[in-house]
Image (cartoon, rainbow, N blue to C red; front, side, top):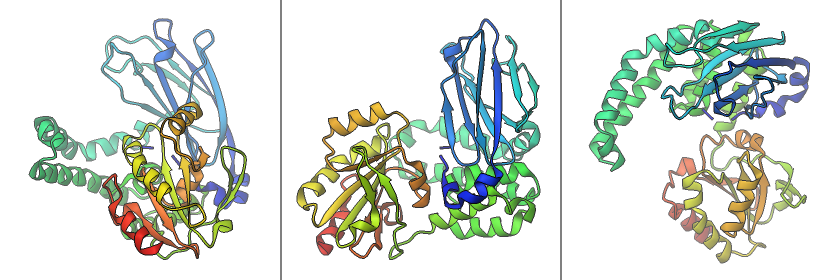
Amino acid sequence: MKLLIMFFLFLPNAIIAQKVFSLKVVIPDNMNEKSFVIYYENGVRRTEITPNFKDKQCVFSDSFYSRYATIMIAYRDKNIKYREYNNFWITDAPATITFMANSVSPDPLSKRKLINAIEVSQMGEDKLNAFKAKEVKDFQDFYFANEGKIAKNDSKTVKIYHEKSQRINDKYMAFIKKNGSLYYSFWLFRTGMIVNSVTPLDTLFKIYNTVFPDSLKNSIEGEYIENTLKSRNLRKRDLAPDFNLHDITGKNIKLSNYKGKYILLTFWASWCGPCIKEIPALLKIKEKYPSDKLEIISINLDDDSTSFSKAVQKYKMEWVHIFGDKKLRDVYGVMGIPEVLLINKSGEIIYKRGQEKDYDSKLPILNNLLVDSL
């Protein structure tokens, strides 16, 4: 489950509510320090940590805006098949997670000692896993039995595959509705379901408004959920949210300054295969329409600026680039990339790729609209 920065839209409250967590991770001598993968989620964003172990200890800290900061730790050694994350919640009390050597469990991190840290599994995760176990097993059995047909996009098989996937999503939602007073349900709704769920937007609004108690909704996390759902509701003919940022050359880029010309706003990353595949279509658009009529502004979501820069140079993407500003992704309700929006001379959104289902990398619907508009 991938990013989250809508908090900038309600910054004054966030400043009041922010706390600071501090975590020490201790590992045994027989573990490879480079095999650790660590993320934390602080209520507004998910951040990957490059662990800097000294004497088998690593310490890091940051602000957080949710009830707990979530710590996700996995051990990715080539000789170990178990690759799932171990999830922990910590508060502003200094916390320590000590892993101990373990050769019995398939998870090398299963033996641990916690100080001021909570196993998320004990706070609702195990309960959810049991609740959806039948549907998950059915989905996995079907997938492994039909992997070849799914890869070849066999229509009948893919249809069943999506139906079984939908049943898992439905179980998530049923669990949340059944356990609305449980903080884990609220956290799950915020970190996963409003971003990755295929549940219709009006249903998500209804669940949020009717399932959770006011004590949870009247929080920074509640404000984030409301703003995220509202941003996902951006439609054609809505005014595009203004922004005032700097591009990679340091130039100030303010959307409202571009009124009078069309703006093609793209969200992409160098690691995203479909993003790279559609670059030729963007290059053709750039060549066809002069900058006094249409400007391309790309929002890059890479974490690594070097990979981003190499991609821009390799594919000769000679237009405006804004690097690493993930908050704008959330402001525009971007649930997946690549995403492309066309904004007209008056600042209205007249095309949003995801809503148009313009999934062909040649962007035929967009190109037809450009011909009619310009």
